[in-house]
Length: 160
Image 1 (tube, rainbow, N blue to C red):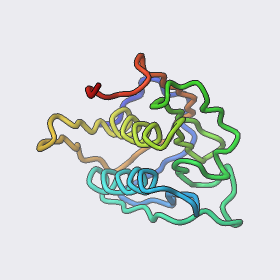
Image 2: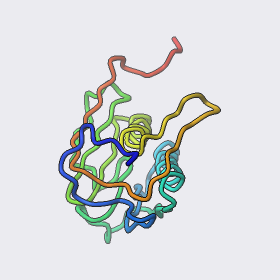
Image 3: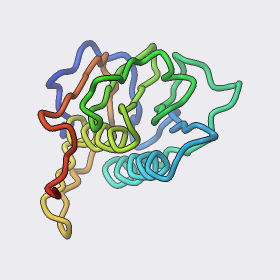
Image 4: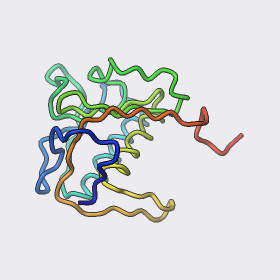
């Protein structure tokens, strides 16, 4: 199996099984471009790895915490996550029932959280801007998660 178990608690669901998924990626109706891009990256790489294309939908009243959703960014599902003091680019990956919440202190933190999920649980590797490694698998389990990433530097940038 190409997914990593490191930092993973008990398996609670499967985002993808046998190349199929009941999960939906959810964004806020007010999602900014970075949050939309993070959702699209999750959709793209999950499809590349598993063959399953998860729909992206705008959050509405029918979306309930605990359901089969991947919440990206500032959604109502993720409003209880405290993302203050994560050095601006930090993020949380947390499960609530069968819902995966990915939320950063800022929108870039959310994007970093999406990439971290892909790297940890699908073993996707972004080697260079021109080369990436995406292993193939028919499943993507969802384990209990409560990951907080606080970068050592306030901003992840080499610009002064």
